[in-house]
Amino acid sequence: MRHIIALLIACIATPVVAQVQGVKLDTPVELPEFAFANELGEDFTDADLDGNWTIVMFGFLSCPDVCPFTLGNLEAAVAETGMRVRPDNVPKVTFISVDPDRDAEVISEYAKFFHPEFESFTGDRDQINTLIEATDSFYRILDPDHTGYYEVQHSSSVSVIAPDGTLRAKLQPPFDPGMTAEFLARLQIEYRRELSQ
Amino acid sequence: MIRSALAVMFLPTALMANELTVENPMVPLAPPGAMAHAAYFSITNAGEGPRQLIGVSAEGYMMAHIHRTEVKDDIVSMVSVDLLEISPGQTVAFEQGGLHIMLMRPMGPLEEGKTVDLTLEFADGEKLPVSAKIMPKAGGT
Image (cartoon, rainbow over all chains, first blue to last red; front, top):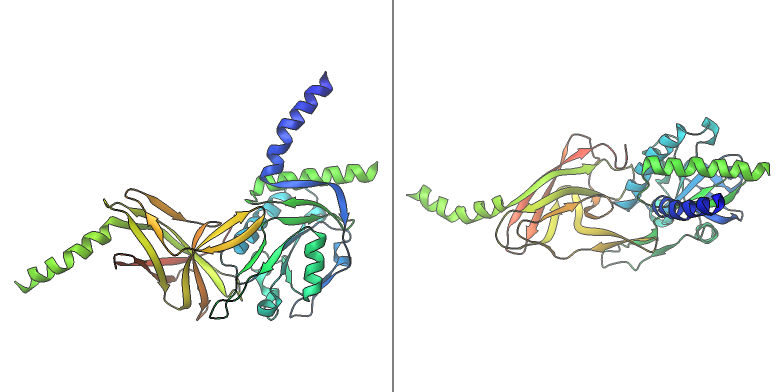
């Protein structure tokens, strides 16, 4: 009986949390090799995923509304997470531009603006496509208008990658700081529990 | 005599302007290198007839557009808004993650505390000046 009640509570409680701030993947997803860089010569590769939690967000610099909004919210969410987890478990936030043609020359400054430890990179189209596909993300560069300006569509959710380099969850807007931090802290507890089994 | 004639000439414009009020116009400070960023405010139509916002211009930018961020099935798109009807008594919020004024290609650097001068254009020919204050960065904190 107790199990049934627990199950009922789980059924009622889980979808609410899942819908609002994040979705934990049923099975962790292994990520392929990848390499991105910025104009300062810094790089971000699959090796950088080892040993720390990483949040990867895709976007572009000509994105007036949702990209700054998301990075600002992630800054608040990560600060909240820092109050719930050990300092070495605070996720590193990495922004990947899917628009290297316009962004490659200035990419390093972008994410730093939101937090000094946030990093931003871009890369070759095949590298972008590799990581987009591996994280079940999406982007599309639309046709330019008469001025040459083009829009970019992209995923609104961001990817959460565990210290073993596997994709574990997606965070979704509105990235409420407290609830996102709660979701991430819980994800980390579950991760450690899985590792110890 | 001349003064009263002028007053009559300008009266309709002044009355119309009073019907539309803009509150909390702001521009979050944009990250370095951003080719586009956004302005936000809320606009209320206190008049008796509907008003149609059909365009915007911004001083110091190559272009400005009325845009709406839409999220559908986890995909973010920006939709250009050609006409925004504001009903009598209605307040429309331009806010992060929704309607916004997209400011494209700033001609100079932005400074917190300064302003961006916008002009909202309506279908009846009215041009409503809005001075948006440059605020600290976007987002949660």
